[in-house]
Image (cartoon, rainbow, N blue to C red):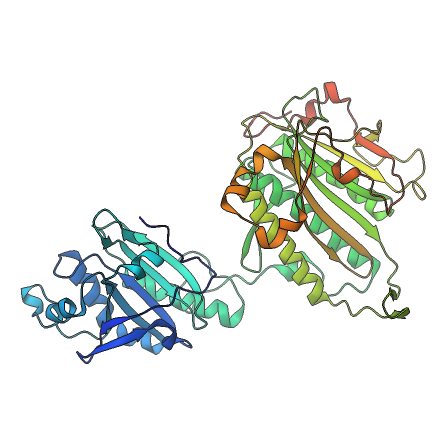
Length: 470
């Protein structure tokens, strides 16, 4: 099957080709001429075959139902427009199509099939591909069946209705949704405050973003079992969040560590949270991946505009913060899904840095004790990704990820994240500190690590897929 250019969320490949229209006339059909309407564009292997007429006739019979919801149906195969017409003119009792209410495109050069990734190159025919394109020309759904199995017209109609509903109402449709049934409203309001006008509201927001990010990382990297998470919806994302009452001891340990982070956040001591993934339970500093969360605290004061040399009021809104949060999580999802799979047995460690100028020397958050100031390090070269940042009137949170260079081969080969992180990738040879922490623009920080000694820290043995964590 050809690779194709069709991608979900991207403009559907445009084309112009001969087609037999419902009135039986030949016409040069151009996909972009249908802009402003939804399109169901389906491929079938060949004219005068057994399965093909049943589903093509079914699509034709349902054409009026699709038109009622502003959707056009277009079929295509590698046969010529003359062959299409001959099949249409053949009575249905003799294996023909009869009168058709949908146009049939002639992809004789096979360029359309190739662009949409459905060309069976060894036979020169198309698989049974189906593509839903929205009224802006964006590809929303792809289904490709092997040759013997046809498609469901009812399911296709349901999908178009679901996409149109979510486009209009901004809600999420669960599995099996049909018009009139309940949808899932994006859970933004339940996850975060509507406003961030006070330091307390901002603090809750930052805590939840930290939990959301850590949960997403551990879930997408397969560190804890599925039942350690519950599902929440943020925009169109289904996000897994760690449960406090789960059976996974390792997940419970991470939650306890996060509670310790919250204490330091509330006191405005916390500067950096580092989570390291390591293989040797007795060598917690030698990591293969690490995740960094850096915090700054502001006082909702006017910011200095250096170019104008004057104070200006920042017009930061809740909508700005929301967009930045969703973008950060999306980028984190994309990065986690494209890193190489972790080994079967990995462990986690968490290290905290504090602001020296405000943190008491004897301060210890729950679950942590004072440690020596040693950084996480990688064997050989590491690649750093600045995932993103978000800001409220009282807090700034920056998120970064680092991994051994050998673990980002999928990203490098597939050229993923080029738009977002190409400029954010830096290679640091040898024993590298996490972005040279603490950074030069911040005060030196105390370093602390989980309460138990590293060589005896059974609670830190958070083995991937291990079901008997201590």
